Image 1 (cartoon, rainbow, N blue to C red):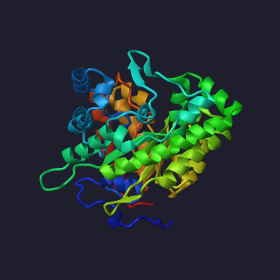
Image 2: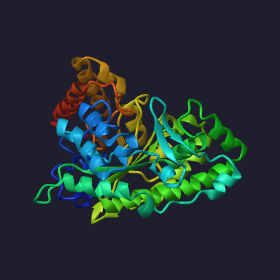
Image 3: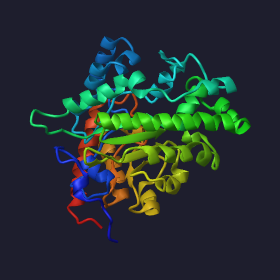
Length: 374
């Protein structure tokens, strides 16, 4: 089957390594690129040292110098094919005035929730430049740090946001939740209020991602962490429809280069073909999805990202390499695969095990590419 691939000119030429972007655009690559969700995080001792200097997670995330430092740390350890902005998905609700803080051992908490008509009426799209300038400043600073004195950039930079539904879950629940009882009950009892929250969130996410692109992000990702908590039908109404609005509003070109868009719904394998139809360049998959079967469903309509089980990284090195080969072999010798975990890396992961994974993905995929693409 002939592939309709974007022209090579759609990829920035100042990049020393553009493999990640080419894979997202379903162009042939010499090997399968790899990056990891939460690749800058607590499994790295250097991250923990920087976080201690910052005093808190928010002190880290809201300081462009610290955010730049930790974004680069995994790239200094491993030959990863992309950097991802160090930030948090809850920056938008924080900018809306809900008062984000992180409680030790409990995760994120908001001082104010959004549960009543009055709460919803107060919501507004934040002024990104006024409230989230620390994020766009970090994006610009990271791009500079990735670039040498001759204007050559090491790897691309990914920007990101939470999805409208995932943000709404935290805004209504006030923090993390095991069952999302409050927000789901609200969605069924007062869908008008939830749709109002989601509409505002979608507008905010579009503005936020576009600001990151203007600051230097070369691809963007929408994290729909809690979309899989919804029933079929409800997922489309409350999550996917709003992701589609975001995708439609995001800049797809900047400074003459294509800006690929990735979306990832944890637990979203049931809706793979629907997700692939909303205009994204790539769909992230969690570890419960068979990668080969997923590719058979979507063909060359989108790239796929994923999807090894993060727990594999607790296995011995030989087992890690075996499982990495299995994922690569499942996808096959085709363009359009970005290797990643099926969810974020655990804070307990041995750093040396990540090195084994990255090495095997690069090694085995190069061997696969010795054959012509089929």
